[in-house]
Length: 89
Image (cartoon, rainbow, N blue to C red; front, top):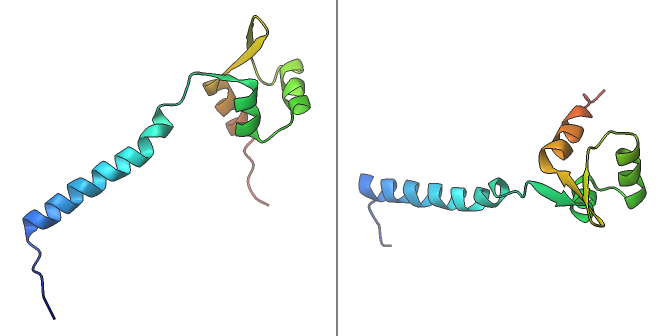
């Protein structure tokens, strides 16, 4: 049976590698696009095209249209999600 002794330096290296790996995993979440297309929003909200249209029509979800493409601000989508939070009863 071989025993391997860990030094403080080994532990510091492990900590550094672990933190770098965690940052690498979390990084894509911070690279979120500012403007989303309808298909992206439907995936994010898990809703149908009709539901997304209703959110636009009733003013719940602000949008902008350029040419034939509708864009939504990521922050606006997150505000709608956060505005509909409810406590479990």
